[in-house]
Image 1 (spheres, rainbow, N blue to C red):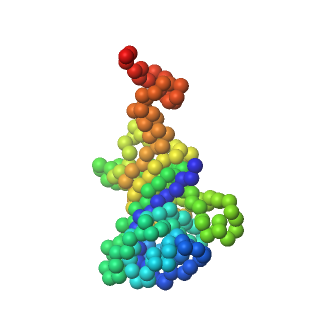
Image 2: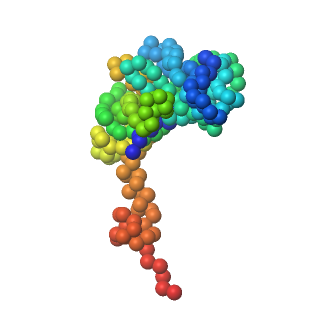
Image 3: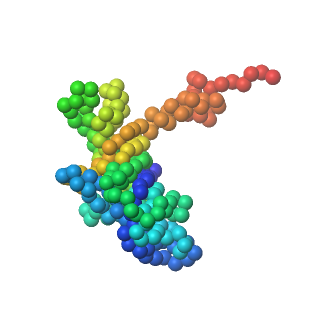
Length: 241
């Protein structure tokens, strides 16, 4: 299963589009700016490649800002960051005139991840005494790499560091958050981790996927047990005619 991360962000486009393939729908790439917090509190402008599968009339315009949603890929060694999009997942919000500060930390990241590490960091807050930190691995496909080098889809992976702060789950749920588990995560991309180079997300939610599937099965046990796993003692028998 592909553990994809989907980003939604408003990005200023800083270059003219470059065509990468032929056909009615073509791959075009543009450079845009993802605005983050630097370690000293200043604005960190992180360059992003917006990779669109669009027609000539749908390419991104330089000096415009776009709200873009699509799969995110990130190479921590080079800093190369790619967002895939199409005409249905980007919106032109006009020429970029707003201040950069308004866009810092506004990009959201949602998706499936495999837990690579779990840490509970003690805080000095009297109410929120623990900050949950999850390092999760996400996967992505690089369509241009596939187009140039192979007809088979090859997946790559990268890691994101999630901090939960006041959204840290209660202790009774900590036991479910173990290395290797598949979880759904959601939050705002705020900065980059100084040591690892990972994106740092201020997370608002985490759900263990196995627990979600089990809950769904229990709520849908309306078919015989042979057809619905987990419903052996809870299937419904239709009333006699």
